[in-house]
Image (tube, rainbow, N blue to C red):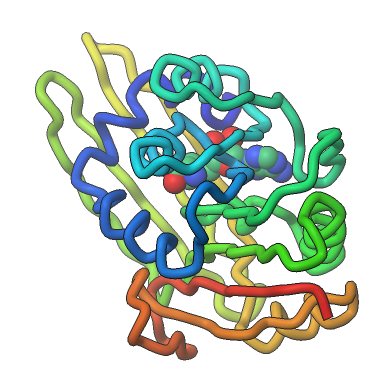
Length: 229
Ligand SMILES: C[S@@+](CC[C@H](N)C(=O)[O-])C[C@H]1O[C@@H](n2cnc3c(N)ncnc32)[C@H](O)[C@@H]1O
């Protein structure tokens, strides 16, 4: 079982209720017209395609070819099969975004720092980085039906280790697939410290893609806006 392999084909269906439009609207508060953006962990390219419609130029990078294959069908920017930890693109961007828990896939603070270093290398001097992090408060489970697909999700949060393990089991035509994700959950102060240690400053932390809402310990998701010091 590998992450985002069979899952990629069903990803858009599973997240059809996610309010991508709201997230893009939030991002546009920070973008200047014609900004050139890199979406790290672009997945199936939904944010990128919506930003292209708003006349921004956007490239994507992702670790999984299966996700990029879908992104290619809906966006025109360049796509790079790359791990953020080794990001190496011969361009500098006005902004880098990383939406929906991409950085939580990293194992520890050292990896977060390395990812921030790599992203910092790819922004212009006045560019900025926005990372969107998952911030669970409890364990749980739920089952949903999407047309002919049954999806069961189970997640367990170890508050001490700051690790959330989630299982996504989806059954199609009597075959069950299993996608397992291990997320390192980063506290607000950890992210601020990690950023500072690599020459970035967190200028603001938001919650739920709301420009008027400051992120706090109990927010379900957090958006960190950072610039070079
Ligand atoms: C939850 S999905 C989010 C996709 C997209 N950003 C969205 O909002 O729909 C996480 C994505 O991060 C990618 N990813 C995970 N670890 C990565 C890494 N180290 N470098 C680049 N991409 C990564 C996965 O392949 C997957 O496409």
